[in-house]
Figure 1 (cartoon, rainbow, N blue to C red):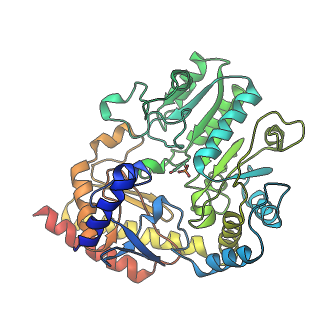
Figure 2: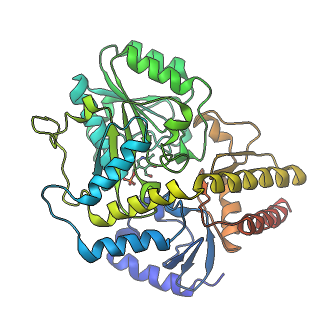
Figure 3: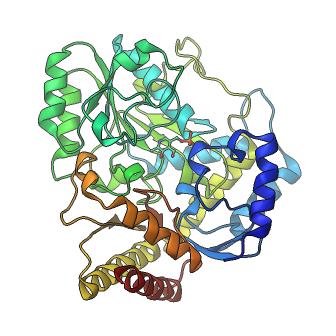
Length: 430
Ligand SMILES: Cc1ncc(COP(=O)(O)O)c(C=O)c1O
């Protein structure tokens, strides 16, 4: 793999930007400098071409530079942009679509990132309940702000303790964020009991994709709904990854569990920057976009034409074409193909996923939570992904990362990938 231009440009990047990248998790070996994206492929500065399953951590549900989405954005920009006042026709159209499709969305507000959305959701929950504490789950990621940047991809010896993800965080924020174990209702019930009357909200990725793909066990999300109801706490589904990717109405539409608040982002706009917080009218009307509302909501770029036009176009494609049928079918083909390969080669693994998402954990049982994942062979996992990268299959070579299939991937892409996986695993087994 030729990386000369990548290396040269990355050295240049480091002169101006700490570490040379603009998000910590992007600082991974090899340091690629991307120059082009098209359909299912991304290209680096040395013109290496990769079949992309990373999908920028999830937004690309239709594929890179999707012509219909791009055209809608360009057309929008030919006539409109941003006003800082009132509302726009694009915001109204998009809001109508989100409220029509997402079960919990009586009302919706737009912002620019998933982190903003989860911040707003938690502040709203605290205002509604006049309580301070929140529950999140070990391994789940909800963005970079102090309320939630704890116990994410914790070192194994940090499980069971408070594990702040950053220096400089407010002690009080860390203290008021309680950590539970995914798929363990008893644990959650105990926290509600221990901190009776103090828990404003429970925030959860209904499928914790930030650690690959751990599915909720039957009754788990339903149980959380009941516990939140019993304790007058708000249930927040963070559907920044699952929303639109697994169903146009979010995973809640599949699970049949309706949260009080939902956060959305990523696949909503096929790679363009926009996110949303949606929820029950009685809560959303507390935001001060509503006269008399007392929960601050603002943002210079909220509702920008670029994000709103892209989201409208992306949802239109989902409404009119069999996007989910296609990506679910290919997802199943990929997962069952990988399982067959592992079986043939005698590789101990648990191939996880749902719909368009897949990952292989190199361990010999089905993980139920983050703690279980310490049995994944991390070195093998990273080496495997690195070798796939060398074969032109783009999966970030980091431990516990998921892969995404998009509408633009084809049967041939899956077959090519399976062949590459088999040859890499044969080589690694040696
Ligand atoms: C589930 C979830 N919530 C929130 C966020 C934060 O979103 P953003 O990076 O857009 O701030 C992410 C980002 O990966 C996420 O996966």
